[in-house]
Image (cartoon, rainbow, N blue to C red; front, side, top):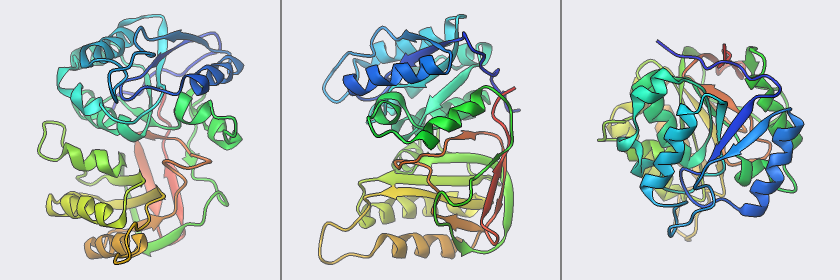
Length: 306
């Protein structure tokens, strides 16, 4: 059974952690004013500003921040400062019973996909795939629409993907419904063969990525295909593939790669969602029921909060 976290109220305290790579400090500082505008207080993780190579601190320290935020009764939501690399390194060390006993809003995307998948499949907690503080919200040109979708944390409402935000393209006609799952394609592929392998059975699978050549997208989709993950899904939601362009003369185009696998499995599929490494970035809850009407280009998602 899905566990929906409690909604936020003005005056609540938000915990900020960096479970992957070191965040941009200037962007992170700017982002805090946005949280304050929402009427929220902020508590920073002890190791948010740590750096250990391409990691925001050693594994045990990033893990400690995650555990501490879930344990802290004052903290009502946990928002990741940024992504990058490293969440897969701590997944096997997380105390999932601690999360089950202290469910709360957990928000991020990109490398955070590994944590979304592991936490949801180990605990049932609904989590949120959305723009992060240093990576997105704290940028000087942060899109107002990206910020607007934080409102789903304060009041339950059915989320309809907004018309006109992006050009949607039907790859396979039809309707499909199921629990929404997925996220960053690279991270989803990295779960295969682990205890946290993505479960797509009868679910709507969301995929997105950034800076991957079509050949790399091909390899990862082929891995999901051979593992039965594309075939198991009820339908497919293709998010933004930012700068996923060929870096060599001899290459397939990204659309050719996507079309090959999507049409091979022949499940309802819609492409072009502004979900992922893009601006605006429409945030969505993962682990709730959703309906995809690929024919009429509509996506409807249940609220992620109580």
